[in-house]
Length: 154
Length: 228
Image (cartoon, rainbow over all chains, first blue to last red; front, top):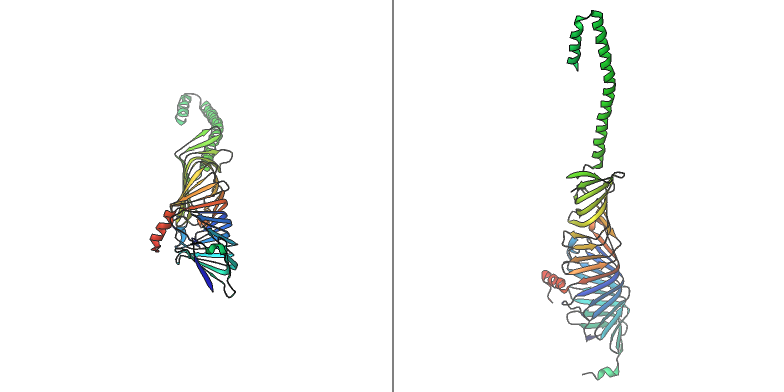
């Protein structure tokens, strides 16, 4: 059982991305960059905060140090908080997959809230290019809490 | 010297034979007397020369080629020193400077001014270092950068550091002062950086800030043919 909403939890590609963290290790040979400690990613209206974030690059060796490396996927962990416009989500872990343009948040309690409406499940899948988000309950019931006032919106 | 003694011998020919041999004997002993002084002094002089040459030679390590040297207030000043060598992977590194000042008391320690160094990090990555000055320790091949300097990686990455300790042979760099790194389209700022494992591991620590320019993302997309 899942519910899906359309929102603006997405990664646009025409705005610069700012990433902040306490530590960054760029591992050339493993083609990955590991951000650890108070990781915060901001792009346009979207903010993501987590304990750590690992960026996996496509291509080999020195592509990272030349900066033109192509990001394949991003893994985030250690309590993930995502907010974009009216939508917010919290989870334990998350994975952004650039090829399929989707990101998936997982955890014991994945909470997606939009204004006063709160949806709780265990897996949130968002299609980045459309912003469509689907929350799965993985067996349990999706706990939906709708705010009556939100019904009146056109 | 020999011909002089001969002429003396001729004048003696006229005298009594005993007198002749007596004067010859006296001249011989005079000559021996002189030689006794000249030879040791000469030997001392030669050995001194030899010592001096080797001392200077040891000051200027073989792998340094120097345009000219002069001694200024107790320090050897080398013009346009060029240092070259091979690191442990057999990749050669080179370093040139406008001047190198070497303290006579510690020949291993050089203060370099206006440095240009090519430090191989690995077989594909060479770091070019340009700096106003730095201290180079010949015995350990370490370059202690005491003034702000730039590193240009052969991949197009440019780093600006306030100071750093570079192990030229080991291909490592450590700096605990703010560093900025620019690549095409993105930049990394942090309070410290450590480059180890021959450039394969770059660790930033302290208020790390990364800015990725959308241009970088977009042309990556076109390159890899991803549809938006």
